[in-house]
Amino acid sequence: MGALTSKPYAFVARSWELTSIDTIDIMDAVGSQLMFFVRDENVVRVLPRVFNFFTSVEWITDKARFFYDALRRGRVTYPFFKFRGFFVRICFNFVYSYIQKMSCASQKKASLTFGLSPFVDVHTSLLVRDISFLFSKVSYFLGYEEQRVEDQYNCNYIMNLDDVNIERFDTFLFLFTNPRFEAPPFYLRMRALSRKKKVYFLSLGVFQSFFDYNLGASIVDFLKLVTGKSLFALFFIKRLLAVVIGMSIYQREDYKILLSLLSILREKLISNVILVNLLVSKIASVGLSEVGVRRLTNFKIRAREEFNWLFLLGYNSISCNISKFSFILALAHHGSDMTLVSDMIIPALTPYEQAGLFVNMEGRYLKMSKVLKKSSAYGLTFIHFLWQFFCLKFFMLFY
Image (cartoon, rainbow, N blue to C red):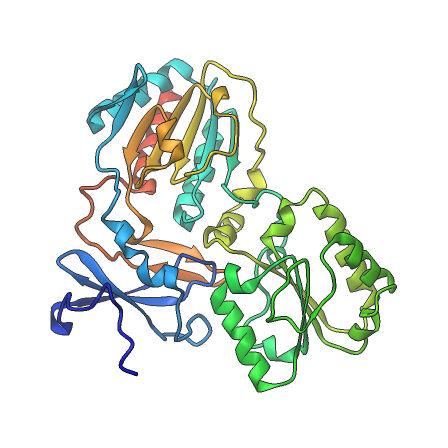
């Protein structure tokens, strides 16, 4: 067998023609270290980088390795305004003058709703939170099931298992989560642990060959486990148990019952060491909790008002009744279903075309470097637009 080479990179460039830039992976919440190889402001190759053992592995997913084609294809390059059902190309001066006109007309009567992308950084989240104090009615929706997560304590929304204390446990219970798809680097960490010592992987709600035992598929099976009527009830005695729950548990209508049963299980196994962890799948999840955006989330779209705005910051899926909004502004770097229904489209930069700060699922702050230096011609960053909007709205209060 010959060498395994990357087909998109074959015969593209020589090694001395490339510039290496270190950054992080935002395709999942682990935040693995990456190396971007750039030639003539085009990314031609992505490889893993082992900088820190706690945040890096010598392996990355196919999504992180081959996504770079999206950085130059299908981009939104000009601002557009919907006029009589058709999009008309406009300039940035018209964008700011139109928003200023709407701000003067609305004053404090406007109701603002933010649709946040799963790739927003900490600084953008912080600025979004500050803008909310200038409006009387503000709500958020995040595009994923983040609004039900309790963020009073950081142990409720981070992964408490790291490479330091993960070897303490000998039994892992996965509740309605599949780490192989939600966080592949974390899945590899589990596999490496199973090769070092004897550990047991139990699952409930997910069927995979990776798990040693499957405890069931419904909440009834979990109830039997907690009340001691299951055959596996005696299995947890004198064992160091770590429970991993996925974000899909918050999609269920009975998620409060599941969390209550989990609390009862912790009380019954009080003599054992039991650690509950939340396995998030989006890089922006922990950062939104750190700055307090999720704490302000109150997604209750009211009836259509005269000034009911919807700002989409990279949000690209329709999950609400958009007819209740009087004005929809989409800050997007690629076309999507939401850009088609928007009233105004502003080109934006991708996360890899700007520097940012992210928080991975373990609560570690990771700095993202700017990969492409000359991409400002595509559009604005989220922070650039939000800061101008913040200043505009702030000075309107004194007139």
